[in-house]
Image 1 (cartoon, rainbow, N blue to C red):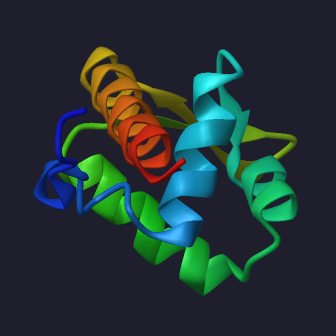
Image 2 (image 1 turned 180 degrees about the horizontal axis):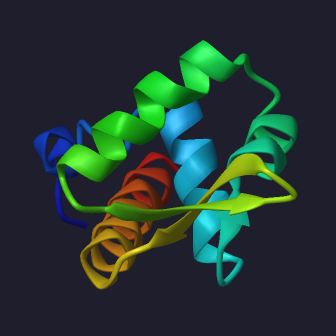
Length: 100
């Protein structure tokens, strides 16, 4: 049995809210801000900060448009984000298998 290296966990994803955002986006083609906010159950400001961190590292991309004169921002996971999320899940699974 190999030893788990906790340093392999992605610090960007390893946050409750960012992990929830990534888990949600990996399961849908895209999602708008309001949908994500409701599913993650957080405030607008908190969600904005965490999504920005994911955008800064190119794990998430956004498109902005107007629907009925209201701004709507839609997010999707990028190929890089999907790869990072899969690696994160793999490392967590390794940790869980070592502990059991």
